[in-house]
Image (tube, rainbow, N blue to C red; front, side, top):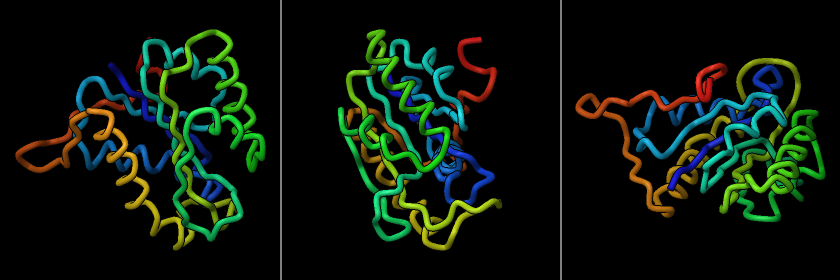
Length: 176
């Protein structure tokens, strides 16, 4: 059994970078078993398909515009995930929509698909987050860790006695 936590987004567009920043913080703060992989998917699309091979559980983290108050954390599951990307707020979501469709057509779609999204306040150029999205980061990470634990994975906080191990699948790392 394996899980992939995939953060997507554009860190140059303020709140749109929440998926990437969440992956970085999860990597920094938590210790994951060998069966859990973290991946910074950036603004990639179909080229991420190779990372789905053999994955049982896929958790995606992204900014989602759903008309909720900025900073709202949302959970979407199963077939509702691809439907969420039909209302795109950025070009990378078109690629993500194509990625999920291709995964389904080629039978590499993981058995369980969950999306955690955060309602953005601003998508202007810049680094960092609006205060609302910055405030949602802890809650978002808690939901992701809780989801993994519910699936049976042992996830613990990193401490001096229990330092974090590198499980990050960065560009050019996994599968190469």
